[in-house]
Image 1 (cartoon, rainbow, N blue to C red):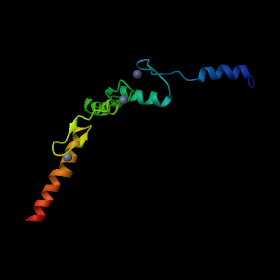
Image 2 (image 1 turned 120 degrees about the vertical axis):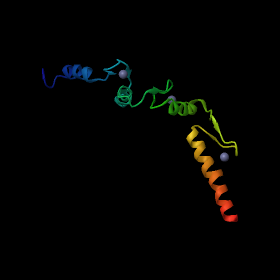
Image 3 (image 1 turned 180 degrees about the vertical axis):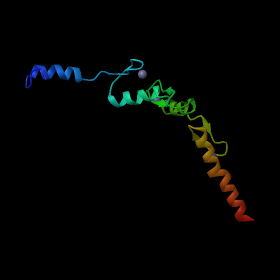
Image 4 (image 1 turned 120 degrees about the horizontal axis):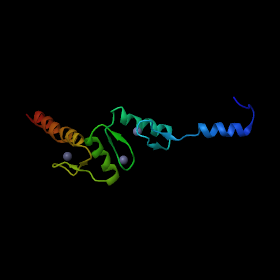
Amino acid sequence: MCCPGDLWCLFLSLQVLLPVYACNICGKRLKSKSSLSVHLKLHEGKYNYTCPLCNKGFSSTYMLKGHMSWHTGVKEFKCTLCPKEYRYSHELKQHVMKKHVLRRDVSSYNSS
Ligand SMILES: [Zn+2]
Ligand SMILES: [Zn+2]
Ligand SMILES: [Zn+2]
């Protein structure tokens, strides 16, 4: 330490410590440490796709597309048997299985 107790020195050291959260791989600057750590996951190959609107990372275009519907409000996957709409095709599949296919099976099982 150069001059312990010196406020100016403290100020200078804070300046150094004060964050420019820059990615050491691509040089991108992030607002916070946590967003930097999220960003770094991109380079780990964990997330290959990022949302251009909120910078969230996703492992596939499928997940990114589903996430984008949160911004656009558009639900692409519509149930053909009822008015329900879903953001992900797997959600629609689950819904159809639970609400339509399985129920039909159960009712036909009960009636026979
Ligand atoms: Zn980076
Ligand atoms: Zn987003
Ligand atoms: Zn339905």
